[in-house]
Amino acid sequence: DIDAAELGNDSTEKTLSGGDSTSVELSVETTDADVGEYTASVSSDDDFASTAVTVLSKANFSVEPDINNDTVTAGESIVAEYTIENTGDVAGEQDVAFLIDGSQEATSITTVSAGENTTDTFSYTTDDGLSTQVLAVSVETADDTASGDVQVNGVLERTALNLTANQTALVTGEAVEF
Image (cartoon, rainbow, N blue to C red; front, side, top):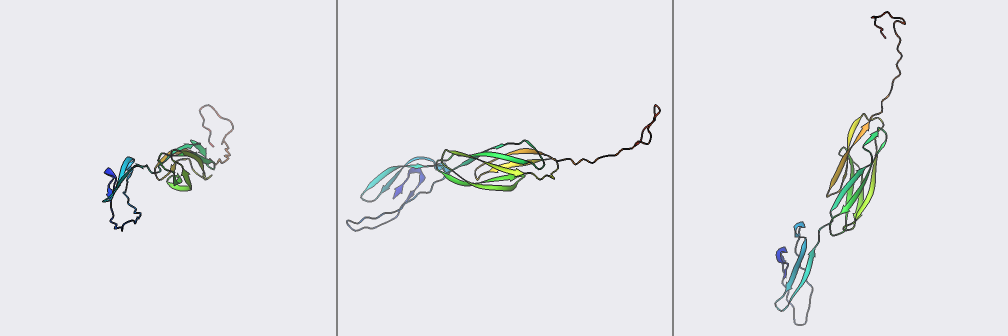
C-alpha cells in the first residue's frame, strides 16, 4: 500500500516466496491544488517506509507584451516584443501566438525553465491600402493573453484640383463661383 496522506492512496497485492523481491509501481493522481510537501508511506505485512514527497506546480507561462508602436501608417510594421515568464516549478514548452484582430498571424514554440523568462519579437506589416482604423494586437500562451491596440492611419490619396473662377473682378457683395 501507498498512503500519501490527503493526496490519496493506492495498493496492489503481490505474493512472494521466501528470499524473493520485486518492484511495484504505485501512484497517486495530483491536481494543481495539491502543490506542497507531503509524506508518502509504503507498507506491507512485514515492513514500513516513508519519504518526503514534493508536488510541484506545472509550467505556467505568463506573457507581457511591449507593443513598440501605438500608431503606424498603413504599410508600416507593428512590432510586438514580448516576455514569457514561467511561474511554475518545472520547465515547460508552449506555443506562443501573435494575433491581429483575433486572426493568428504567427506562432512560435517557446521553452522556458522554471522561474525563468525569455524575450522574443513578432512583427506584422500592415496593408498599405488600409483605411484609418484601430487593430487589436495580442500575444497568447495556453495560460495567459496580453493585448493592446494600435492605430493605423490610412494613406490619403490626393487628387489635384483645377479651379477656375467665373470672374476675375468683383464688386463688393458679389459671389465668385468655381
